[in-house]
Structures are given as C-alpha cells and as structure tokens.
Image (cartoon, rainbow, N blue to C red; front, side, top):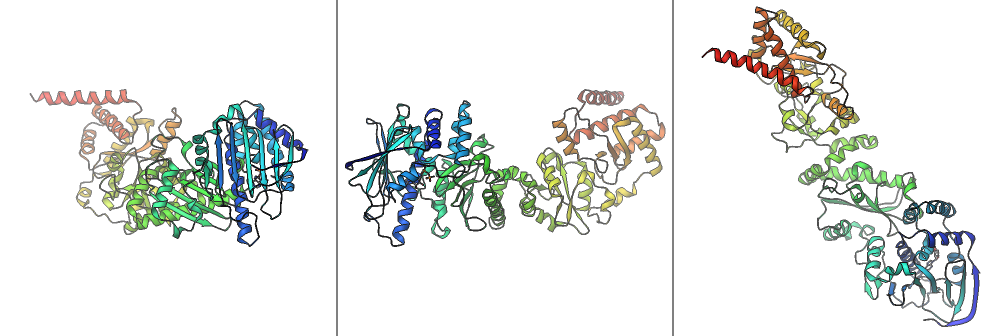
Length: 634
Ligand code: ADP
C-alpha cells in the first residue's frame, strides 16, 4: 500500500453528481452488478490507452508491469478491489474526470432516472441500459478509495476518497505502481460482491471478451477471446463452435456462421450464427432471442431486438462497434442511425450468406428452412430486400411426391411448361388436402406444377411479392381455364370430350341446381377444369382466396363464407345421372337431395364445415334412400 502524505484537500462534487449519487444509493439496486462492468470497462480503457502510448514510443512509468486487471475479494473485510496497470490518473485527471460526468446527454439521463426511480420499479431497468460510469460503484459501496499513478514519468501518486455524499478528498502519496486501484467498501446489502462466483457471473455476462486478462484472487476468468474482432482467416472452425456454445449456454453446434467486419458506412465487427434448432418452437420465449450488442468488447445489451428485423430473430451472435454512442438506450436504439446502418448491412450479408448456403450446401439449407422457414417468411414485408428474399423461399409442390420435397421459385420457373406465363399456387390446411384438391385437376391435365401453400403466412408472402421475376403468382382456385387454353394438355382427355353432354340440357340442369342452392352460390356452370371430381367451388374473380377467407374468419368469427361459383363436371357419373333424372322430371326430389349433398361435400373439401347438423342430416337421408333402394332387391 502507498504511504500517505499530510497534504489532503477536500473538494465538493458538482450538483448533478450529488443528485446522481443520491439516486444511485437510495433508489436503484436490482442492477447493482452494473458497477462491476463499469469498473472493468474503465480499467480496460486505461490499459488500451497505455498500450497505445507504449506502441507509439512514449516512455512510460513501470514499463515492466503486465497489462492486466486484478480483482481481489475479501468477505471478512467486506472489500471489492479492482486494480489495473493502465494509464492511471494525474491529480488534474482525478478532479476533472472523476469529479464530473462528461457524457453528452447525461443531464437528461439523470432527470429521467430521477423521475423513473420515484415510480416503484422503473428506475432499475434504466440503469442497466444506460450505465452511469464510475459512480455506479456507490450502488454497492459506502466508501470508495482510488489510488492511482499516471503512466507519465515523474508524475506523483494520489489517493481519492469519498463516501459519495457530496465531497471527496485528494491526498498526495509517496508512491504507487502505475495504474489505478479502486477499493470498494461494500454496503451490507451488497456483500454478494465479495463472492467470487458472483463476480465471475457478472464478468461472464458483460466483460468476458475484454482483451486483457481479468484475474479474481489470482485466477484468470475471461478465457474466451473476442474472436469476432480478429481476422476470419485466423479463426478455426472449432473456435466458432466453442464460441457459439458459450453464447447459447448449450452443447449444440451452430448450423452455420457468418463472420464479418465492415468499415463503411459504419465500423463494426460481427459474428452471427444460425442455430440448428428453433428454440422459439421449443417454447423458449422471445426473451432469449436477438444478438448481443457490444461496445469495444464490453456488452451493453444482450438479446437486442433492434439490430436485426423480426424475421431474422433466430440469428444469434455479437455485434461490436467502436463508433456507437456509449449512452445508447433501448428506447433510442431503434431510431439510432448507426444501428440502422448496421442493420442494413447485416440483413444484406445474412441474405447473401443464406443464398450461398442454398447453392453450396443444399442439405444444410434444407435444415435451415425446415427449422426457420416459418419465421423467415415473415420477411415478405422487407421491401428493400424483396428480391433476395424471394430467391430464398421454399415450397412443397405438385412436383414432389411427398411433403418432404422443397422447391425454390427459380426451380419452379425452370420447370414451367411451354406457354405458361404465371406461377400457380394452391392453399390448404395440409399437403394431403391440397394435393387431392379438385382445383388441381386442370393443372394436372396440362402438366403445370402448382406450389402448395399449407401455412397461413404463405398467402401474405404472395401479397407481399406479387411477382417473381416476370411471373405473376396466381391462385389455382381462381384461375380461369380459358387463360390456359394455349397450353397443350399432356394427358389424353379427348375421349371424355366426346362424351360431352348436350350443352343446352346441361345449362338447364345448372339453372335447376342454382335454384336449389339459392344465395349460397353466385352461379352454377359446367366445368372446364375438372377431370375426376363431380364438382368444385370457384372463387369469383377478384375475391379473396379460400385460404385468406379462412384466415379472416379466424380473426372475425362472424364473417360469412362469401358465395362462390359451383362448377360441375359433365363427364362425371353423378352429374350424368342427375342429368338423366332432370330430363325425366325436372322437379324430382332426388335432384334436391343430390345437389345439397354435392354442395356440402365440396364445402368440406374447401375446408368449410359451417353447419355440420344440416350436412349430416342431408347425408343420412340420402343413405336411408339408397338403403331402401338396396333392400327392395331382396
Ligand atoms: P466513462 O468511462 O464513461 O468516461 P466514468 O465515470 O466511468 O465515465 O469515468 C470517467 C473518467 O475517469 C474516464 O473517462 C477516465 O478518464 C477516468 N477513469 C476512470 N477509471 C479509470 C481508470 N481505471 N484508469 C484511468 N482513468 C480512469
């Protein structure tokens, strides 16, 4: 310990500091651990500065001292002591730097803090976001003693001492090693900060990547280096994996990583990972999501949601910049132009990285898609990146034999048949129901691939995209068969055409069916699109697709199913028989029964079961009738 000289002098804190200290001591306590971060951060800065001086050839005091940060804890004496071998402070530095708050905006911050700390729980949150530098030490300490000596040759050593209630004293010392030692006499309520495990956990959280060794009672605790700040070429795959495990507190390895550094439009380093598993689905809340924001190796915010857009929220990692303002708060983060710049660069790079992954490692990309595709699709509204976004989309389609297959829009476009101008999709609840939909029959006949949309979001994606390259995206259940007449059929349906019924009679049957169904349909007509099914419901032009209607219905339960067009297949045995009955007796009750059942069955196929009692009643009456006919034969 340094020897003390008689020459002590007492100084008063500036008014704003006194106010700040008062708030810190009396109102804020849940984020007390911030003080450890702040002191370590100051120590690391001081070491950076002295290293800089040494590198540029300045003669420095005690050149043999290692660059390091030492923390000594003593439970019995209730002491937390942090020592660095950094740049140290002169007497003037002590008065000017420790006696004032230099940050711009600090006065506003204190006002806000004062206002919020009056409300029960608001204040403590604010402090975690902001940091108040050296003074946060008074959240945990009653008395603080700084011993320091500047790196400049021939400077004296000084002791600064204050209980944080309005004044401090500065005393000249005979000697002390270069650097700064801060002795914190802990409050009774803050004795946890004399425990090694507690300090370790704070360091692990905020200060793990400080580039100087941090030792607690002699043992180094920060062992993982800030690899994102090092050149890519020097980092081994193992290091990335190790870092990811550290970051996620998990044994899982990442699916892929992206390591980048940028200088324009803003300097930053970043290391981003896509996990193998979607933790959101596994029930982990959004709290765990988002990248960590660092400022010169010190974490200022974990799980920061503003650095990446929502649709990339599964990305984990680190963004570290030298250029951000220190007093950045969660409230201002979103509007901060530097953050916006970083975000723009990161999104572009991430999308390019995914594109590359899709090309070079299709299997890995598939894993990515299966885990995160659902979240990724939310990016349909990122208009600035819509082209890249579209290339990254994947869908199952009629090209695939089962639900496993995935196709990109580019692959779809390559497979388009001669004369095809649009990209077609069909929505439904699951693959099976879409793949068997009567709406597909026309497309099968023409050999046209149809994308299967089985998630509600898919419809929104289409609304966001409108087009892929020059091709419009069109719903198969709203496509007019006439628009496809230039595309030759690949299946043989000539025979069926021969059997086509007399169109006049068929038209009459359509009118009869329309009369039976009344307002429930807008029109009944002979179908050009069906080959196997007896009937199908078609959306009138310009109306919402069936899937979108269902989405709307989940939002608004009272919304009625809008009336649709019913198309009937003249070549189907049921319709042929109905026509026969109609020709014999246009009023035959069988026509009503068959029509009702047909209507209900196509409604079910489209996913509507609005009136099951009526439906079942009709069906059962038909069963009774057919069983009567059957038993008549006995
Ligand atoms: P900030 O670090 O954000 O500037 P602080 O209140 O934490 O604010 O510190 C004020 C100033 O005191 C620092 O800018 C630095 O000049 C000086 N200082 C604090 N701690 C140390 C230290 N360990 N070594 C040298 N100078 C320090």
